[in-house]
Image (cartoon, rainbow, N blue to C red; front, side, top):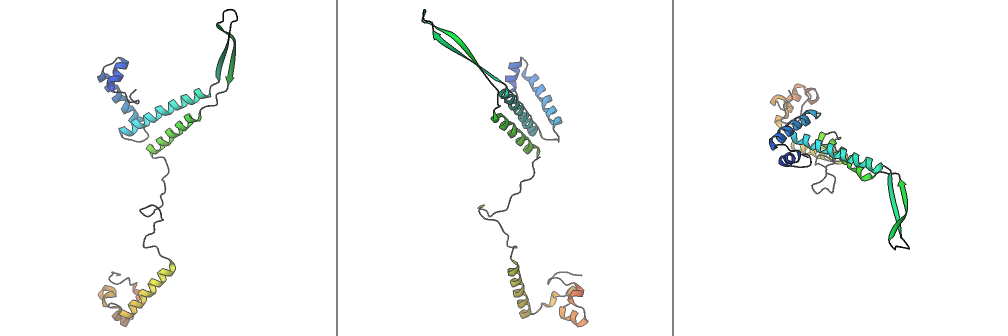
Amino acid sequence: MYLKGYTQQAIADHLGMTRQMVGYDLKAIRQEWLQSAIRNFDEARAIELARIDLLERNYWDQWEKSCERVTEQVKVAEANPITGKPEPTRVTIHESAGLGDVKYLEGVKWCIDRRCKLLGLDAPVKIAPTTPDGKEKYTSGATISTEEGLRRLQELIAAVKADGVPENSGRDGVPVQELAERGESDVELGLAAPGRDTG
């Protein structure tokens, strides 16, 4: 009754108990739900799982009933020629196999799906990034074609050649020209971008 949303007082009235006794019993039941969960879930999740279990049991019961053989009696009444009153003259019995109502299995499936979501058993859903309006595939500014990358690199090289190399772009603050005069090449030194510490 608690899973169906009845208040403690309504449950107490129905069972002939005090509301306090129902409260104690519900507390014990909630503890049992928490302990029976696979992980230590919070109380709300345990209650929802118990509700889903109850609903699934009801769906299975209704499914089994819908699979039982169906017997239907049809009574045909004809008027008695002497009295004029209708009297049953024959009874026809139709028997058919219960095929089961698929809507109950759909209910069972819903319960299983919902339980898996609550327990986190579903595989993660991959979501493709899109633009804020959701219409186009999202691409960050970092994604460029090879041709565009080469073009930008050539522009950068040309700009560096035209402006010269900044004096502080060498290792440990020593200008690159001075390092070259010492015979230390950039490859040997493992120089990084200007301003970065490589040593």
